[in-house]
Length: 277
Image (cartoon, rainbow, N blue to C red; front, side):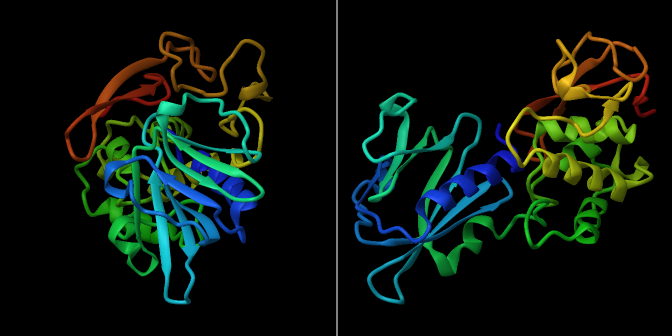
């Protein structure tokens, strides 16, 4: 699933291509909005909100303002093409096609696609906690929200977007490793929760530019992402491989989500991240 840094980069690409441009045509390939036409509307801006994308448009009159809200979920992606350019993904996976004189923007396999009045954006993203990459970021508030449930595993609390917005499975695993905390440890057992959260924010910020993801930490003085033959992570998807810090084999486990409806993999080093008692 794309995380906050991926959504941030997608928003920046869409902003560069569409901001200030008038739509020549719009095509919403979902039943609820299949008849909606926004031809002639102008794209004011595209902004990220955690893992959500908000594309704000201005209509013919000053009062006409709508927001295209999308969430990439597991498989979604927005791609920008020159006008009439050939798509790199199958056409049947397209859920939204927006055309301007300068570019075509196509949303493929979007997990969520809806259009709301801009004045009502809170109905779709108002539940989110402070955005680690947003102007509303507030470390103290994020920590306060997480601490309201001291018995919840920290790995679950970090993925709960109501606490803080933008962290996904990769960065929760890497941030916990960075702090030496087992993802299954209860929030109450995390001594430096603020430091763990700040570390997660640093991971996302380090990956806003082009190039491979890296965990900003170093192994034997070498950036992890540049080590020949190694992935760009300390523990994520490195099950059975030796920990780059202590040599103990990395393990994989599972944690239920906050809603308890599904389980997600966790990766950790049992040597660097002792299991909770």
